[in-house]
Length: 465
Image 1 (tube, rainbow, N blue to C red):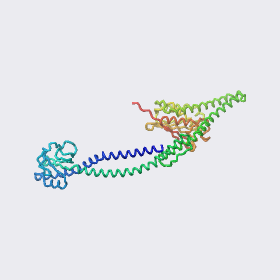
Image 2 (cartoon, helix red, strand yellow):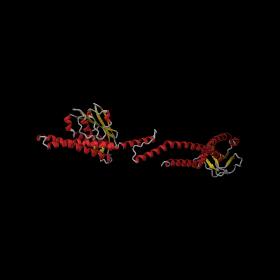
Image 3 (cartoon, one colour):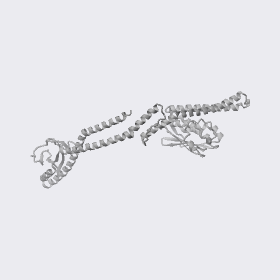
Image 4 (cartoon, rainbow, N blue to C red):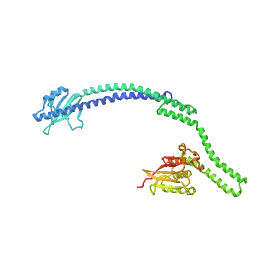
């Protein structure tokens, strides 16, 4: 492992360098040659247009071609100039060759290209770059002016470019060696240390720390693995605390139940007072039942978030139904509901049972921590393709230090959060898991002494066409 990864990188680097060289040698020559010939053709075409226009003007004035000008231009540029009449008969050749031959294959409409590469329909024994432009006067086609240059001129320019390209490639390749060296020291060596650290963790040495200090993704990975080791180190303590929390929540009601039943069995509690204590025992058993049910519900959400029974239902009706279940406890505390709905019917696509449970937990939480004769405001508002659900109480609120811990399982805030401390400490955890299973998040804002608001969103049902 210590050398394999670096050797793989080096092998890939060398193969890439060799492949690039072969590509440049094979394909580069052809690409440069085509580019050079095309560039030469564009230059020749500009000259052809200029000469054709001049010949058209001269012919209109003198009723003949300006042969002297054509010869002078051909001599100065080193190009060969031919003029063909409409019947493809060569009527002028700057090389002095008898101008009485016909280029039968010439057809200006043969392709859309403005130039030809080859022997120009057998006119030359070598490969040339040829362009042509029509000559006309008085709206009559007189013929075609063609200019030809040996392709070897453009090829020589292409070879010069290719030689420079190889020089540049060599410089880039040497520079890339420095990049490989930097890659080795900045990435490969730290990755090796991370691999060694992972091996130590796998062997159970959670006190081992990976010594990689870098402000990048590799450093972040090393720090994440170190943090994982620290978390695993404290896993036993966390498990013990978790069991202690469960034991405490079970022990308290069990102790009360046992104490009252033992007192009644011993005759310490008079018969006429036993009904009161039977009700207390029943209340404690309900606490145990609620705690057990909450733990099972939370566990089922952890194991199968995707196991939702999705359907379309009226969220307004659901909220009203849940509020009605709290009618008795609200009358005792003088609490009223302020229901604000953006529409008489708001149909959502979600799991009715789970959303009912989440609303029940939030409203129950709001009632517990509301003042006497308080108000709980529930607002439903359509926002785009979703509906925003807000449950707000105007009670004692949550302290800033507690706000980030309310989602922790079995967490219960201090006595400033209200007198009702019979909860399981799982309600908000269950609610967050329910909302998360729907692919949404739940947010909370709170001001001590002014109340707390929970907000989450659900997708609206698609309208049926």
